[in-house]
Length: 208
Image 1 (cartoon, rainbow, N blue to C red):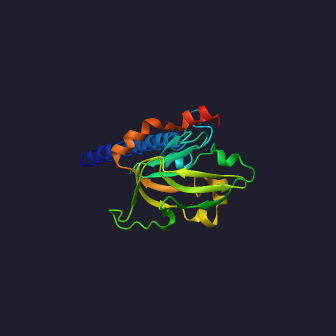
Image 2 (tube, helix red, strand yellow):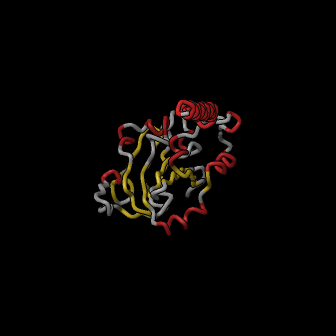
Image 3 (cartoon, helix red, strand yellow):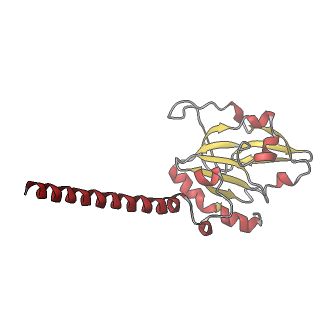
């Protein structure tokens, strides 16, 4: 009698073990099928070109014909409110033969390159209007004033452009940025309607 009970008990345990192993195998097979779907995107849904670091981290805007025809500038706004200011690809300065040859931050009543902001409260930051001059860029035949585009505190200018103005010709949207400005939220909301987004810019300036 006891032998029979033992056999039935062993048989039951064996079945439970087999069921567990079978369940585990099915789960592993499911994972093997589903994992690639999670890791590999559907090719049909992928963009033709991956987004750039700028597109991934900033909201992209443009100030077209700012103060003068074809004086196009970009405003890259970060989620924290900071705005990176620079020359748009369609800026008239890039049309001149040889491109931009020099950058001078000594405009207005002060040298913008002397800005030194410290601490969380951005002590010593200069407060400018949207039409305030940031710098002057020159080409072989002409010179152009680059402006703030947004009202706010000037936190930094790209001093590399003084010694390496060619950065503007090679990578104006990255290493060749002009300045970083922090507008107040209320001032940003006032200027935003006058700017165009990336898609609108491409259509208006017929660039890819």
